[in-house]
Image 1 (tube, rainbow, N blue to C red):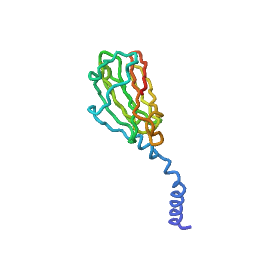
Image 2: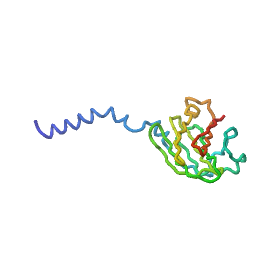
Image 3: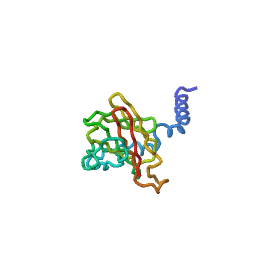
Image 4: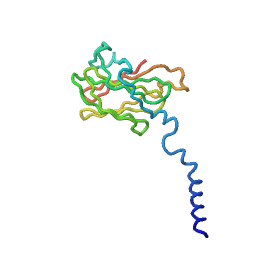
Length: 177
């Protein structure tokens, strides 16, 4: 057999054999939409809310709360907010990792405490979680995917979770509305 013919045959056979598998490698189109991360600027942060029943000492005047990070996850039409706050008099560095399934799609270090908070908006229905680490403690916050407005859940409106981290490593949460 001619070596050139053999190599051409192997190349065509390899392409044909893998053609159906290539679409399953990487993120699907809905995951790509969910993995989009946009820094919207602290001037566009959501107003801290949903902490009235949390056992944390937070200023009851929203005007005293200061956003230190404002991000949007996904590029869908949903509107589900996650606010992270730390019940501390002095700022403490908190490591935040946002996961989409088992993949980390965003990491940041923020100074929380003294009424400083993060504002994260999730707009695509997907399995997100937020891992927080500070002072040797680590916790995960599951984003309530079933509350994110998507085309198949058009009756949902703005929702959110306010999470207060305490100095003992406990994450207190309140969901709204």
